[in-house]
Length: 116
Image 1: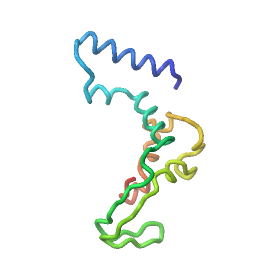
Image 2 (image 1 turned 135 degrees about the horizontal axis):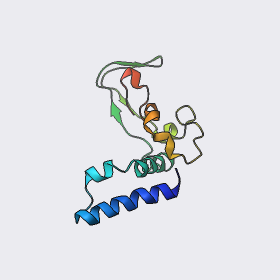
Image 3 (image 1 turned 180 degrees about the vertical axis):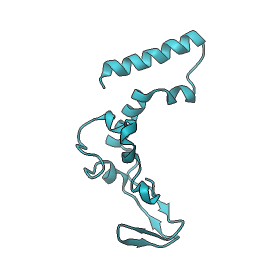
């Protein structure tokens, strides 16, 4: 995906809004597939949130570790976002990693029901 494609997507949205004489809505942003991937990759590369507190709502065993219900956990999001285990070539700006076929990147250990 190049900047030309991104500009074309944005110009198409601007044209549609001008024809319909209205402002941008949340639904419009959901149609910005290229822009959305650029935003996701930008946030992955330059995350402003380093970590977040979570509380286990049930007993969980994760990769050999037992986390009892009620314990607080602290996922280090920057470490995840810059891990080659989850993002190959993590130093490369690559919005295509967030295409539909790469959905597994967006959740960690989703097969066990855990989401990041």
